[in-house]
Length: 398
Image 1 (cartoon, rainbow, N blue to C red):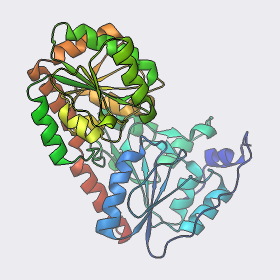
Image 2 (cartoon, rainbow, N blue to C red; image 1 turned 30 degrees about the horizontal axis):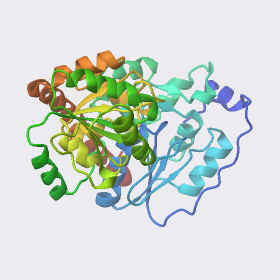
Image 3 (cartoon, rainbow, N blue to C red; image 1 turned 45 degrees about the vertical axis):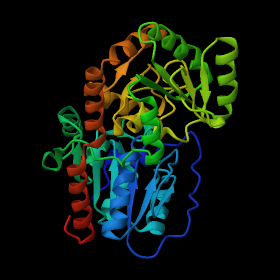
């Protein structure tokens, strides 16, 4: 591919910060697929694909993400190379990927040009809207168009996203609306015997959960619980504090200063019929609490620093979701849930109590939970198609 004027200017532009050469671990032997995500949120679907590739295709997988992500299975994770000619060449020489998978829409023009020159097929998945690497923004004639035409296939999440890629210069025949890839299941485990015993103890009591609750939101949640309990006196609140060290002082404050009937998980106490607030030992057993609570408020999203838990966790286990205006690192996920009417946003304690009161209707909670489960479990067909393209790339047919 002939280097465009835009790419020449892009490569000549001085960086505000001097690029640092990458220092990478030893490359595993054999064939290797490289997957890149511009953010931890964008990496979640790639992690599911990574596990499929390592187990079914049998190649090594390298994942790059600027912020780093925790990976399961035989996948490596390193920071991406700086998008300069020298750094990109060194990166490709070291890792020698046979197929490259980008996500979201981030474009790294120097890297895409180098991969294209080497004949390495590059795919775009979960495409939302194309944009040049944020740290290298500027006006370069024809740069975005040339970068987009490096992709062998561009899978977009919806039609507006596909239009954005086409308008920016992607080859029309390579852009397709597929929807999102599936994400690795967020369903947390639990001991079934423990769940069954607690479910029998709780019987028909209405239950709601505050998951990953920071100290800043404790008063808001308690105020909402008090308001709704006046109408549903058997209502039980389970609090899973963001930090396990907060469990004991929180339980003591609620019991001694506010007069609640409190039981604490760490003290081997049970949520007996008279218990109004049950304080869990941090977030270690959220798989258990999501299964027991038909309604979950996601902590950190209202008055904290941002949602502390992945909303797909309760979604995958059938718990209806309440959340505030601070999504933290889960903005895209909440956007998907909101678009599917699969979660309910609240703005303050009063709003939280009203939403909770409404969802105490089993039918309303079930509708919300079913919609959330659908969002959490979709995308398997798209992942299969991406997997087939990866195989084709390894065979030289892409």
